[in-house]
Image (cartoon, rainbow, N blue to C red; front, top):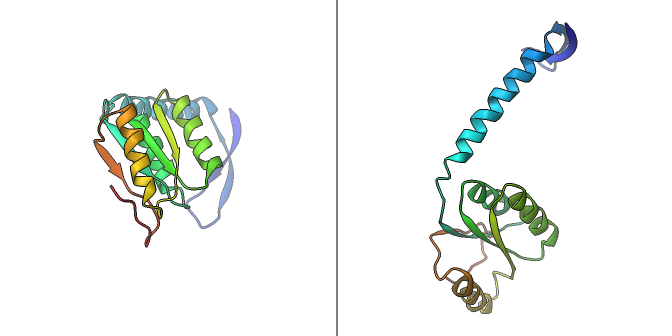
Length: 140
């Protein structure tokens, strides 16, 4: 028997209880298997996704999820190189494919540049996730 902490049902209640750590590990192993099976579905396999990002990172999260589910992702960010690097790292770790593009979505010239990037690498886009802040625009 191993001793470990458990968060109780009561408000901010932490209990020290005796339990079998192997059971806990087995539970997480089962959860990992379910997650792996879910991700193996690859529901977006072969799809091309254009994802714009906002300062809150909603676009970044969606880019990672789409890539984990099989989509190729073009991730467009604006002056957020660290977030773009993190997205690229996580997608690469999951075996996904990613193109990163920096651009100001308030600049209409970026629409032309983005169209060129899409034409050069993919030819078309299947999914568009526009997570730019309200009041901004992206010409498609």
